[in-house]
Image (cartoon, rainbow, N blue to C red):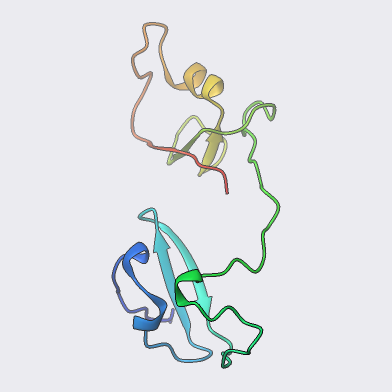
Amino acid sequence: PPPRYEIGGSCSETRFDSLRVVRGKPYCMRHRGDCDHVVTIRGARLAHADDELDAAAYPLRVFAARAFRRKCNMCSLFEASVVTRADAQAPCSPCFFCASCFECLHRKTDGTDAYSGYEKYAYYHE
């Protein structure tokens, strides 16, 4: 059976020191309503003299990944700005569209929706 996760408060309003975590236990962090990340605390240590001791400075960024800019699944030329789910006209779900391809495939010439039955979200790059 899948692991059971406890339901907590909002990520933006939860402080790490308010959590009761167990080393090695997986926890689910959810944001944007349906984007889940499994987080496992593998270890902890006491602060060193070289560490930042001001609690207000945390969380510290210790790694910055290279920015990933997802391309449109239709034209592969422009950056995606819209994502759809359960879209009958899309080749995959979720499907990422640039503004131009989304308008072309989902709007009539008069600007009204060509069809419904799919979920549409603004896409913000990782």
